[in-house]
Length: 357
Ligand code: NAI
Ligand code: MG
Image 1: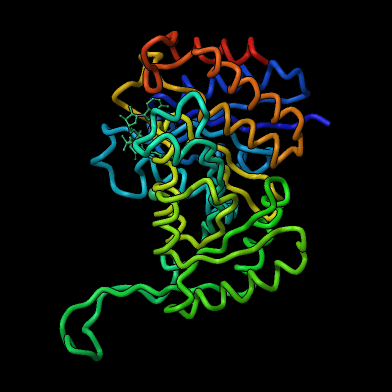
Image 2: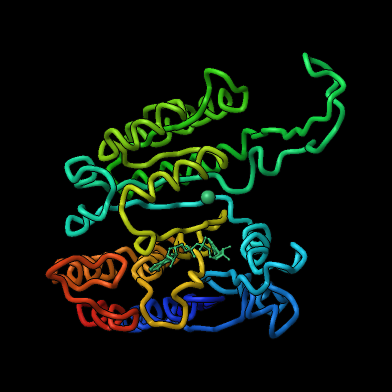
């Protein structure tokens, strides 16, 4: 059956990198249909809104969304609701993308690109599964008030509410365990259950859900310790399951272990397991239009798309193998280039991956 892909390149390098991912997908020879729409600053320029109704409708009816990046400094003065970045928040909310998967892989050829010692990052291959629609970012009540008690009673205070419900934790836990089943079958639950009520519930629910996945080895880390382990011994981690706030911070930390932001893919999934697939980086206005961006994060996101949304594991493996082949052949974009390697453009990297495929 034909799979319909909503292609939303967005701003800055978005167009250049998404073009490479589509090039690689087309080379698979599968029955995919591609429908393009504007999103972000370019959508604001053409339709007066960063997430126009036509774009949202397409994203909802498609089998998956392949997203580039949004953001353009020329829109920095717009009211918040019209800024390009609102498009990604609107898509997360409207498509109910509650699960965010961010792999951090250190390819053997790129160990020297990391700021950590090669022996620490060599063999690194983990994925952070972050809950994306709950936690203190969305919890109510929130606001400003006069402090009702405590040593600063009467002073102005800001307050937020951290909340997680049992079904909310259950559904993200299932995503975590299913991901672990497709990998090395090891899941680490990261929370702060020594202090937080939400974390106690979180840990309790994850432990219960784990009984449905007896093959997966489950262990636990407090989030502060997890932050240490990520730089001490990151190769000991496989799947890291955590809430929205902790996941936000840990996923950026994990990203940096690998060296270049141009290598990092992400998937944001809904109940059906489909969703939105995008590189972790932004629109990189400083290098936009120069055909020098690294498209690997976007090509890898496309691989995640066919793996998670279309269950085409074999084809996803082929794309990942092609990326590895190109890297081991010494082909590099500028951000990951080192002495003795061949430097290629953004489209040159897309061509090389297609050829390797
Ligand atoms: P950025 O990720 O766009 O760029 C940070 C640095 O990394 C820049 O020096 C850039 O040239 C480099 N870089 C990023 N991607 C690269 C690639 N594929 N290849 C080579 N180098 C790459 O982050 P920045 O500069 O903070 O934000 C720029 C715009 O992107 C802003 O408007 C921001 O709001 C937006 N943004 C959008 C995101 C999204 O669409 N999901 C995520 C993050 C930022
Ligand atoms: Mg972040």
